[in-house]
Length: 231
Image (cartoon, rainbow, N blue to C red):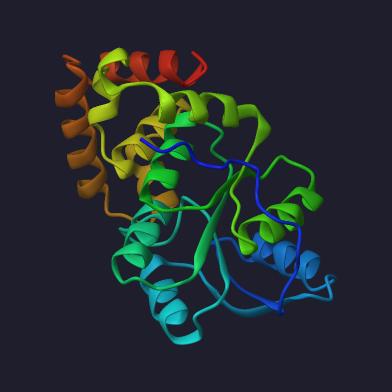
């Protein structure tokens, strides 16, 4: 498997970089927009808060870059959106800007087609740097997870032991993290804009995939994973 050129790419700048922000929190969108609009070579051409809204906007505007959060309104999340962009062969390059610093999310985003992955706790100027790197053909991944990502891309598959958590879907992994953070099904449903029944179905599937006997064991598993480094 080819090794991605992480944090590489040229520093040459071409035309104005058109950008769409896909984020479900209005204040976060405003913060990103205000920061980017200070750059003379960048322009915000649209904003969306769900994957469905975003794919329509991106297909219409065809921005150079889409800045995407993992957690979005509606059933589809940011990784689903990246898959959709790739499957439609839209030329927009995606950068994930997320609160999730778990390697699992970063690896899945990159495999889906993302060209960058940053966590929101990083310095604001890091996003500007990432936009320029990705726009000119490189990749940009947060320093804290780039080493692990590179190792996973260059290791032979047979040398990497399979663990049950890898069987979880992107949404199930997101819900597992929220369970580990202490959220109840009703809270998760509200946070992810899902029905409680849908969350309960996800929980049931997660339990089956992880081999947890009941909800208490699932909660213990989620907490242990959350505090294990999640790599």
